Amino acid sequence: MTDFTLVDGETNSSDNTTKVFYTSPDNQGTLIKAFTAYNDTSANQSFKAYINSSKAIIPFKVLIRNKTYIGAEIIGQEIPPGGSLSMEQSSAESIHFRVTGELLV
Image (cartoon, rainbow, N blue to C red):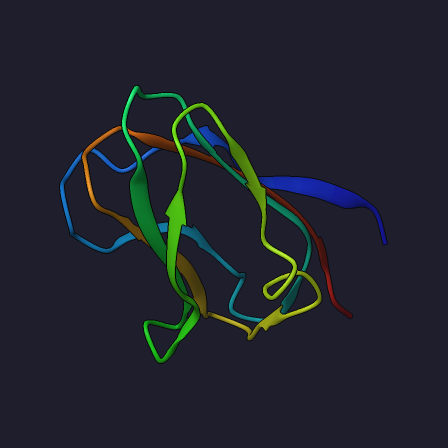
């Protein structure tokens, strides 16, 4: 299978609110191959990442201003068929997410 972009530089427009960024097709799971979060503000920000709105895969990560984080703990995780990838961030539009993955057969 071929890698494709699940999330392309998107951000959450609300403070401390979980937003669904990607939903896996009903008949296929999706394997997360790469995950980056970039804080382009002048202050430290935090975020959380969830698969299926259950326990956070990235429970709480402080991202220092103007830094990028590579989410090793979420790489290799599977979003089940019909499942979703969601993120929450401390300040609206402060962290930009980029995620790539592969559909599973």
